[in-house]
Length: 444
Ligand code: FCB
Image (cartoon, rainbow, N blue to C red; front, side, top):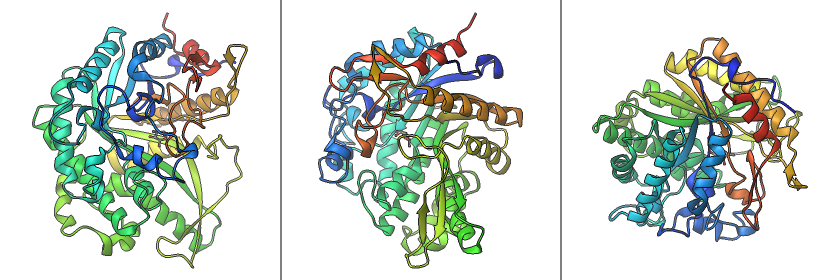
């Protein structure tokens, strides 16, 4: 099975890559890393399927050379990775762990040696436990902690990375983790959520300021977007979808580009916001060099008048789904890319920094046949190409993920990889999708 779309369908210089994150693949029990809030979240009953954590993960800490060979072997141009904050600063602040910094130093050199462009993310959810115990994202001091951490990583890697993103998916960091309680630290508290919704942007701003002062001109942020559809045409359901859209898809980008929060979201969060938040908005609006867009699915909302604000109820959608239960809706990707360019960032370079799918892949006779993933990838590459054709300044596309890995609250029970990872032996076997992508990207 082929993809039916490939490098030749995109502009010259368009980058194809694969994405991973530190906690999901490295194995945080190796190399002197400190604990992070995912370790304690996973150790608390009911939070993570099988109570699994990232202690061993894919053992990428020891197998990184094989993994980078896999990235380069697929003719990918770029590799998006993250640094585990607690690996380089076991206490979150204070003395660095030299072994941790050395690891990332070798990793970046390994990318360059293979002709891969390093796309660094500073924060992909591994809040050091020491800082989580001081309130983590609910504490305004997180901005200073993050800026110091950003400076440390930049001093070691900044001369060789292609781009640096401050934070991965602020919506997940703040809303999913402090209001919905589905991710660490697992809070379900609107006040904590409102504080995190603001502080995650303040930390981003402090990180940008710190690295700008070092002369870095490759700075961005990675936001996630999910198409919010109303369950019916009633005004109440339309308003519900608009509230969801404001919280999920508008809060962060409007703060970053306009210095404001959308009224539909602020109306509910205002009483719970940190004091003096308005004075931070000018800092938050600081210019970016690029924007990262993560996109997976759409969500259908209905008004739930009996529930407290935001009064949303989920409705199951009719479209085919991945094994996450996420509807497959490639039109949403074109929709967001064109909407972001039109309404928010103009001609600022945009990368699709994550897009991918989990399926119940099986290793049989030494191979993994994953036609669902090939079809998913083909459809979303076509959706990306449509956005390019519509004039969006799109510079690249990263598949999530290189490897089957630790899928957060789902433990190791969801497989997003182009490469199958055996949970017992940790052997890597490229899936049919990996081979299809390789053929689609090969250069003469
Ligand atoms: C995104 C995360 C990534 C992975 C994918 C499936 O929200 O950034 O770590 O879990 O979803």
